[in-house]
Amino acid sequence: MFQFSSKTEVNRQFRLSDLFNQMKASKEVKKDASCIEKVILKNVLSPTTLNCEPSKEIKEIYVFEISVSSRDVPELFIKQLDNSIKLHTLFNVRNGEFELSTISYKLGNAKGKYFSTNWESEEDYPVPLVNNVPELYKYILSKFLKYPPLEAETPGEYIKRYNQIIKLDFQIGKTQSAIEHESQSKRKFEYNARLKEYKKERATLLKNNF
Image (cartoon, rainbow, N blue to C red; front, side):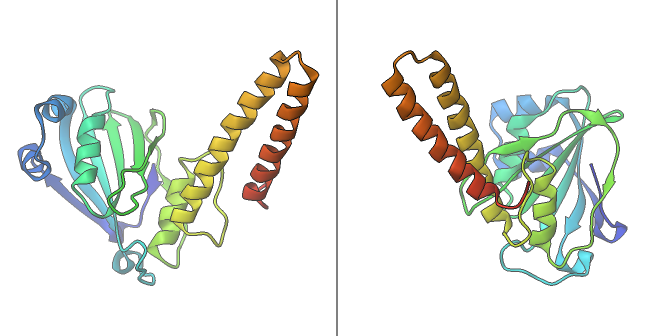
């Protein structure tokens, strides 16, 4: 999905058995991994390999390539492998000429939501020059999310704001549906007032994106 500089390439292949030991994989995870043909640490995105400034927020990003025999995503395997790695990770799952990417923003030991692309024909997109690793991570995240980041916000602030907007989108849709089906004028007035507040808050969070 992304075309990283050749300076970031590692291309280290792992044995599944070694990864299972590292992950302390359960029977369910091993069964889930039955479609996996190979696992490669494809890139390491760091201040050294990117020739950029170091940052305490995100020091490095690992990019894994997982080749599978069928167009199935070994989600349990990916999540447990991701949990066993302290650094931020991007997983590219490949089947023939098709690729699916998945990523989850890590906040300490907390497990974040996974964002994934659809299966697409294998095509890499160049990434921009960045000043630090978090800036690149924010760019990568933006390709998975519906709303773009603000220039000044950190990846963590971006995810937090994005989740708030998605929650408001749901509340706006639910309230609009309630208004359409409500027959009492008093309740409609209350719903409309609530809808106005939701839209105002959403507009504030979107700021100058649109």
